[in-house]
Length: 281
Ligand SMILES: Nc1nc2c(ncn2[C@@H]2O[C@H](COP(=O)(O)OP(=O)(O)OP(=O)(O)O)[C@@H](O)[C@H]2O)c(=O)[nH]1
Image 1: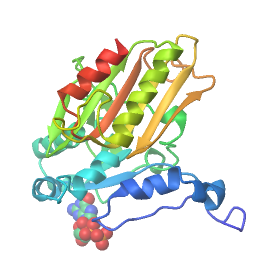
Image 2 (image 1 turned 30 degrees about the vertical axis):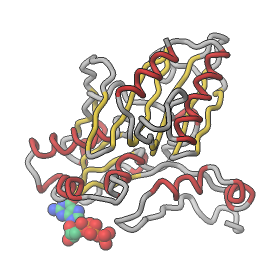
Image 3 (image 1 turned 120 degrees about the vertical axis):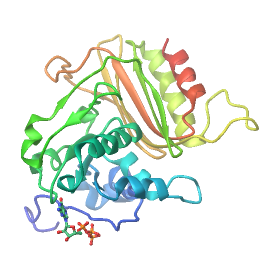
Image 4 (image 1 turned 180 degrees about the vertical axis):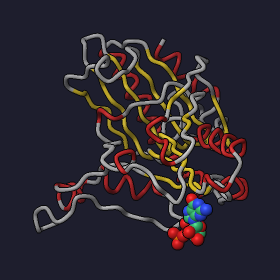
């Protein structure tokens, strides 16, 4: 890094059993790091390769002591997911695997590949942790299709127009909520809600004895404020950032005018969605 221009990108390949969360948070928002190497490099995104042949079995058999296996953590934390070896399985099987992956992580871009072949611009230089790129897919019911690796440019989403859903796959669920335009003071309340959920693993109004623990692995979101500002939420585990984006033009980026929040993790039950919806109402 001391030699200017020495690297274009740094790609870290973790072991198959790694939980990417702690690694991502170290790169993203760590005080020591940001005063050292972090001045020159930033986290671009987390890519997860799912084996089309064995991926589903791996997810089904993945039992960790705390209930979330590493394969699920990897999918939950990813910004881009490649379903590889797609030449080796029938398309119905691929559809079912992709739908499982989408249920765990509705916010990631999913591509089907053969021998990992993909246009690199779809997985590098994606700036997934920058404020502008907290772009969320339209709905958890969207499907991304790419028939072959050569066809990734033809990826398209079908929004079936359903209301936000709550899914749960082996302890991990995702929660996606639309947000109306918020007043600046409501933004503060939302910030407090997020802080309590991420740092104290509970809802602000939870009583300690009755409620199950909430563990957020990844969160993203866009919030529109009545003074015209747009705020972006980015979070990995207990680290999060809610920051304003300047000159954010939703029309230019093909985004809807309303805001959206996505949380992926454990214990995100119906009561969590209700609590968030009440806060935003
Ligand atoms: N048909 C087909 N074979 C593939 C594809 N990708 C990898 N392979 C082959 O599958 C075999 C195992 O490779 P991988 O599954 O990538 O191995 P791995 O266990 O992930 O390797 P590590 O990175 O060392 O953990 C090798 O012979 C590859 O050439 C693919 O998309 N299609």
